[in-house]
Image 1 (cartoon, rainbow, N blue to C red):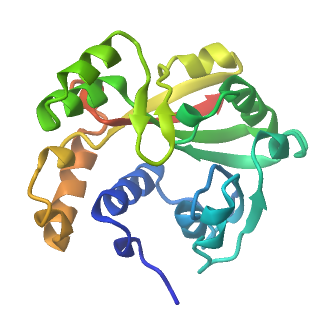
Image 2: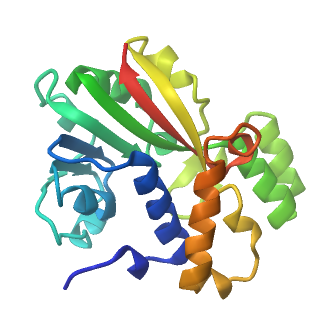
Length: 233
C-alpha cells in the first residue's frame, strides 16, 4: 500500500512538508539518513536517490515506509564507523542529536563520511521556541524558567531533550560550517483549534507562511525547531 505524507498526524505531516521544501529538489545523490525512525524521509528521498538509513529502534524499523527502495541498517554510531571516507553526498539527521550521548563523535563521523562538496541537514530543537511553548501554550512557568536556566527538557516518547546551541556543531567539528539556519514551526502550534489542523487548505496556507518567514530574523529566532544546512570547510 502506497503511503502519503498526509497519512501522518497533522503536526508531523506539516513538519515533513516544510523540511522537504527547505531541502529542495535532490536527485541522483548518495544519501545517509541517520536516525531514520519509521523511514518517512528516507522513503521520500529514495524515489530519486540512493539512500542508506540507520535506526536503532527495531520497532520503528518494523513500521518503516517502503514505497521506494532503500537500504535499512539497524544500529547507531558504530555503523557510521563502518563506512569509508567520503562516501555520501548528503547526510540527514533530523531530531536525533538531542537524545544521544555521543553527538560530538557522530558529528565528526558525519564529516569523515561526507564528500568534500557534500551537505548535512540537521533539524534540532530551539530552546527559545520551547520556552515560548511552555509559557504561551502550556502555562508551565516552572519549566520555562528551568529551560532559561539551561536545563534539559522532556519529550514524551524519547525522554530528556538535551538542548545544544546551533554553534556547537562547529565547536564539535571545526571541519564543518553552518551555511544556513532556517526556522520551523514558528506559527502553527499557536493555533489551538486542533480540528482546523486537519484541514488540507489550512495546512497549505500554514506551510506557505511558515516557508515565508523561515529565513527571516526574529521569526526563526523563536521557531520551535531550527533546520541547519552544513558543509565541509
